Amino acid sequence: MRMRSSSCSFFLLLVLGLLPLSLSEIRFSEVRNDDRPIVPFDQFGFTHKGRLELNVSRISLSNSNLDLSKVGFFLCTLDSWLHVLQQLEDGEIRCTLQSDLVKSVYTFNSLNGKESFNIEYKENDADQYNLVFANCHPQQLKVSMDVKSAMYNLDGRSNTRDYLSAGRTILPKVYFLLSLVYFALAAIWISVLYKKRLTAFRIHYFMLAVVILKALNLLCEAEDKSYIKRTGSAHGWDIIFYIFSFLKGISLFTLIVLIGTGWSFLKPFLQDKEKKVLMIVIPLQVIANIAQVVIDESGPYGHDWVTWKQVFLLVDVVCCCAVLFPIVWSIKNLREAARTDGKAAVNLMKLTLFRHYYIVVICYIYFTRVVVYALETITSYRYSWTSVVAAELATLAFYIFTGYKFKPEAHNPYFVIDDEEEEAAAESLKLEDEFEL
Ligand SMILES: *[C@@H]1O[C@H](CO)[C@@H](O)[C@H](O)[C@H]1NC(C)=O
Picture 1: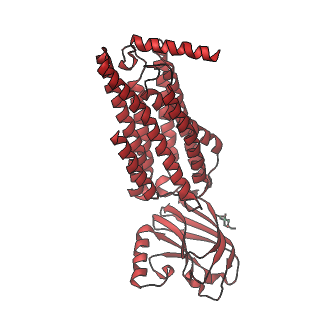
Picture 2: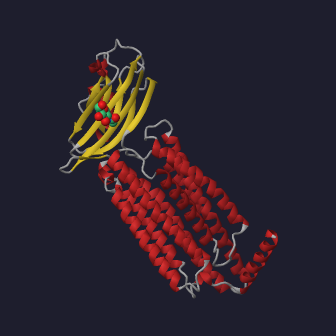
Picture 3: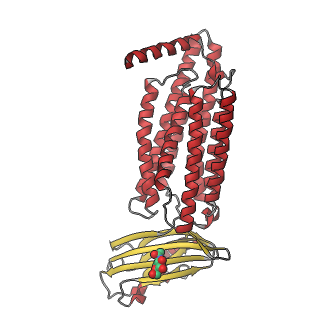
């Protein structure tokens, strides 16, 4: 018990304390009467042929008698940004735009009274850059403008545009390969089900559905990412994609609850407690998916992006913690039964198996949420795909472990159903039939 709550709270601290990097494509933002000295817009990993297109319109300044060379856009790497902050603190410079560490893209003194400008900026030093707006007259000047920015790399000889940041450009291929792996797993599972159809339970068919949903979800993800790569905007299979992620989220959590409570193995029906857990998890998954849509549609610097990101992660953690309860309950029940029951040996064996499953679920949740999150934060922008791959490989391992341990098999210890349990199951079946009538 202690293990669960401490890993959850540790995770919460991590989630709420850090803001993960997110890399994006074509962005549109409206700035209204803003007097912030620094407004971050976007973040992107350039290769040696990086481009920034910046189209700003409807510019209005509350005060045009100021030195407008101290107002404008610049690109800056994270490392140099720390140095710029140091320079400001040491009084070497008065305005971020004066630092030779930032790459000035456009300063507003070139506006000459115009209301808009379009520029294309070439960046040939490969690195991860932030696009930032600086206003060095924060007290005296309020800025309004519509900012449309696109950052991309030019690919190969043909110079086609690649709107995915340097470390993420192989993601469509990664997702596609993974979806093939899951389709292969589904095929293997179907053949196992066919061969062992006499010992297959309903839960084994449910597992098949979970694997197929995962494969379809990855396929959509591949399509979505390759659409962004080509066009810079997040569309394509949007709605289908969200539906699949929703179904996949729910079905995976349901599966964990079902297996964790020994459904189909120990008892064919969900009990009240587990039903309650699912009743909590399902609406939470709906919220998590809405949050995910908002996160995807608004950029990392959109108004409520941080809030939604936190909502999403918080809800996800709550779901993860919630599905662990039924497993703990089963372990507790089994332990008590083992103490009082004559058939202690069977119960003890089940107990150990459930403990293993419990530990694997914890490791899986911990790894895909915390370790991956940490990986995302510490790896260089060029390798940001590694965190995705790590999470997906852990998920794959979890699916394979679950499938292997719970495969239909006459002598699988999970299937050992003692007479009493069978009777109880038959009893509850009768009861339920009566209720339905
Ligand atoms: C910016 O404007 C140019 C010229 O009007 C246009 O070709 C380009 O597509 C625009 N870029 C963005 C990101 O809107």
